Each structure stands twice: as C-alpha cells, then as structure tokens.
Image (cartoon, rainbow over the protein chains, first blue to last red):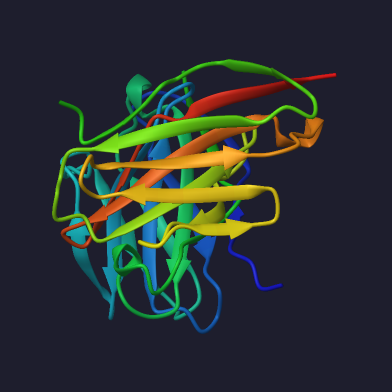
Amino acid sequence: EPEVTQTPSHQVTQMGQEVILRCVPISNHLYFYWYRQILGQKVEFLVSFYNNEISEKSEIFDDQFSVERPDGSNFTLKIRSTKLEDSAMYFCASTSDGTASSGANVLTFGAGSRLTVL
Amino acid sequence: RKEVEQDPGPFNVPEGATVAFNCTYSNSASQSFFWYRQDCRKEPKLLMSVYSSGNEDGRFTAQLNRASQYISLLIRDSKLSDSATYLCVVGSNYQLIWGAGTKLIIKP
C-alpha cells in the first residue's frame, strides 16, 4: 500500500535553530498538507499546498514557517528559528485530487516527525 | 462553542461491550464527516467516512444527525485492540476541523 514517508522521525534542536522536516507524499497525489499535534492536544492544520504554491494556511503558519517542493517528490516544512512552543509532532499528509474536506478524497498521513526544542 | 467538540473520556469499557460516542459540530454548512483513529504517539488513520444515511463497517457504525449537528460512532463487541483515541473530523469551507479526540480504553 502506498504510504507517505517522513524524515526525521525525531529531531532535537536548540531554541533559535532552523529545522527542516521532510515528507515524500504518495507519488500520484497532488495536494499536500502539514499538520501539527502538540503532545496531548488536538491535530492542528498548518498549511496546504497545491500546484507548487500554498493554497491555504492557518494562523499558526506565521513567517517563521515555510514550505517547499524542491524536486517534485519531497515536500518540506522549514521552521526558521524554533521556539520552545514549536515542540510537537508534525504530520505530513496528501490526497490524490480535490480538497480533503470534500469527502471525495481522504488524507493519508505520514508517521510524523517529532520535534523537540530545548 | 468549539467548532468540533468531543468528550475527551477516557471511556473505560470491558472487552465485548458496545460503546458509543458523539461529536458535535458548530457549522451547519459542514459537508463531510470522518472518524479517525489515533494510537498513542502515532499518526491518525482513517477509520471511516460518515455518510448522510449512516454507514457500517464490520463492528463499527457511524451516524450523522444534521438537525442536531452531531455524528456518532458505535463500536460493537469491542476488542482490546480498539483501545485508541477516536478523532472526529468535519469538513467545512474547504478545511478539515479536528476534534480533540475521545480516548477509549478496552479492559480485559
């Protein structure tokens, strides 16, 4: 079964450092998403990406965050200067066609990247 | 009122029992509804979509009540492996809104 893969599985970083989280979506999927989940809290939408540009972003996705699809397979999330409150599990997800909310397509999640900011 | 609200639980249920939980949503124009399952420190995985007419998948039954703006999940003959957090997800305005989840613990 096709899967979304994420690396690293766990990253520990010092506050203020830049972090890049990588995702390889399912190959024929067109819509890509980043979500985060702070330990014990709910899944929160960060950003969606389609046709090489951001289609939507949440209030959480401020100037410290950026996304990129540099080579047609990887989809990356960069946090420029990490803060303690950025510690969370970051999930990448993708869908084949249409927005995830339409019901026609469901999200396939990667296993997540755990970010710990010290 | 929260956009998507769930009882956090935990629901402690003996193996073999039937358990049900609800999820309420605030946006009456919501178009799509899902139940996801999340094991501890793992990614959410789709359990089932919820259709207007209700739908069943093995031991799991999902219902949608648009008038009262809630969806429900019923698990029959619960197994130890059903222990997880169940996330209600509602699609509105091209976004998915996630509930905080209901924790279910099945006890032998």
